Length: 421
Image 1: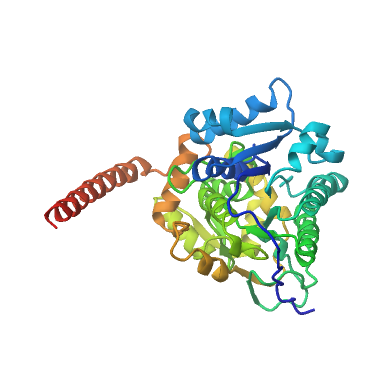
Image 2: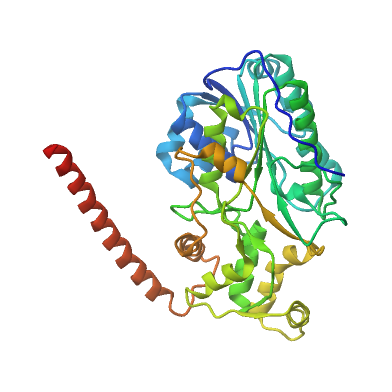
């Protein structure tokens, strides 16, 4: 079936400025960055739904998360600007008290970022966390006119179809082409997005954000707390351990988390994003071959071999402990049977047009970005350094110092010219 053109809903009233936000997923990777952006880029008060955990309070859990990613300065802002609701996306009424539910119904913005992002698990659990929670929050948006609803979806909902051509360009305006999914996570997010799009058609001021492959912060390289649970980082680690990879024609998306969070908070304060679907992925999609070459440029020896030979070699018997560790890292990748004949290229042309002229800019997937990813992963002993990593570090430090001096000279010259003028 042909994809339906995206509908633009019309609304009688929408708040000009975000003043009160209800945020789910604030202790998650992207959610924590969204909260940080809300605290730094807006004056809004933020109500965060936080699941209780053993041995710590919900407030402590949120503070610890912000401290880990941004330091104590940002975490301290929680005291004045954040109200924590102890609840659960799986629970009826989100597990909120009557008073908390009343406050929830007073917000002007809902950012639904919370989800179970594991690829596999109990289907009923995913239905509750990823779908039922969306239904309940949409009901809140329906209850009061003008409440903005921002839904964080995933580009995994592109899925695959038997009728797909050799290469697919996944555009913002497309949604349902009868695609299938290889995991319950992507399927549950597709169903949830369908509900959100139906609400959009009803006239609810909805914005959908399909997020790509999130990587570390573009400046610090800092990745999610549970870095070992990220499938992409597992793939990179395994590739560096093995020194061998399968030849692959697919594209790699590298979306820094700080770009995605900034884009969402920026869009939440714009009325022209109502009724839109945005693709938060890197505008520059690179081939896997290019990504491997970037890794090789840091001194890693990686041999690309054909797929069948790679699979046969990967499962060879009597392999080393390092090989077994790499194999363990690759299991999520191997269990994802995404080779359905089509190559998917993510497109964000409409989204980039929307952000043109703003400070919402996605860093290029170049050697500089890869260096920051590797540097952080190596610093926490998650990935191994190459034989000459210390040499690359020294070169990079020298280059950084030279660039910093040049920048200061340029700033001083500009200041002098301004005084003379």
